[in-house]
Length: 100
Ligand SMILES: [Zn+2]
Ligand SMILES: [Zn+2]
Image (cartoon, rainbow, N blue to C red; front, side, top):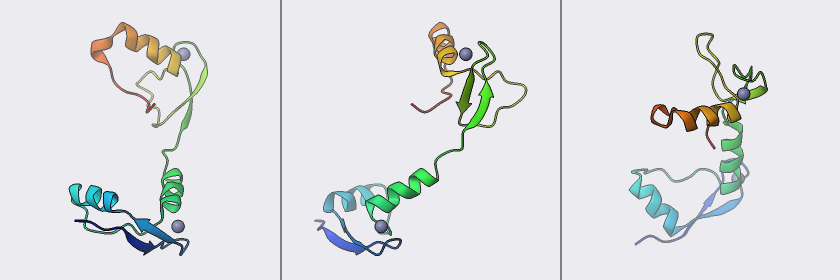
């Protein structure tokens, strides 16, 4: 059985609890390392690592929009509205363009 364990955050040096549930989750994922950071620092790190967004102009309606990938000249980039409208039309050819 797992037991709650108190760890010290590598970033802010605060104590945080590595709960039994988290330990089980880590073990299920095959992770043997303990978390090095407290949940807040982990969250902050995730936010820093967020994908860069690129400013593009929608090929359909001309609206300014942002996409999480570098636009390529040979591919039409659509704003969310046009993308959704396109998806509704071609359900079977769905290619996720943005995380929701
Ligand atoms: Zn921390
Ligand atoms: Zn559009």
